[in-house]
Amino acid sequence: MPRFFVNGPLAVGDTAVIDSADARHIAGALRMAVGESLTLCDGNGTDYAATITAIGKDAVTVSVDNAAPNATEPSLAVTLYMGMPKGDKLEFVIQKAVELGVTKVVPVVTARSIVRVSGKDAEKKQVRLQRIAAEAAGQCGRGIIPTVYAPIDFKTALARLKEERVLLCYEGGGAPIGTLVTPDDTAVSLVIGPEGGFAPEEVEAIKALGGRIATLGPRILRCETAPLAALAVLMEKSGNMV
Image (cartoon, rainbow, N blue to C red; front, side, top):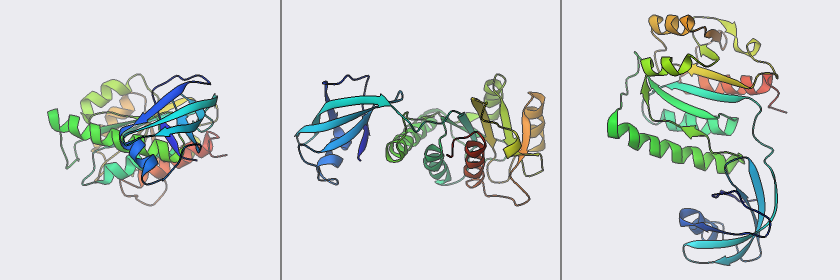
């Protein structure tokens, strides 16, 4: 069933308006009609079954029929700290990470990052990446829209990681990542490097914070493959793949 995020919360019997691109998508690409059903989500974990009551050029009006807690959000909140890769790889990672259940994504400019952005460029990039996350969240039935932050440098990332439970995936070895999470865990920060991986001093800085070094096996994965493989394992071992 088509699914769209709206400002909430809503109540049964309320009228809600879907506007802009979503409204045009409903009327155009989906060719939906008055009387058909769709799902709304308030972005805070509640889904609403709704019926279309009117379709205009740039607005679709619906009536809320019932409400229920969203059933797709994982019990493990994962914040992905992703070393800035080249090209459009970060867009791909964000889209797939949202599908796999990530809660937050923080792009990080590391010592070996080739791409470096700051200021207004970073803000513009954040806006585009957040839009990609929102589209992926709607497509895969998420109950929230994961937050994508503007890119930060490694020093700033370290300051944030001080208060978090950190797993850094490293091609130089470590504990199998599947052994570092259980169904009792509620939050973890996953740190992945860019092309070329982490500089040794960055790995040591994570260790100094109490971070655990994890391995994804004997093969060296591409920077866009590693976070998705790690997320899949974390979700499976925390009981969120059933």
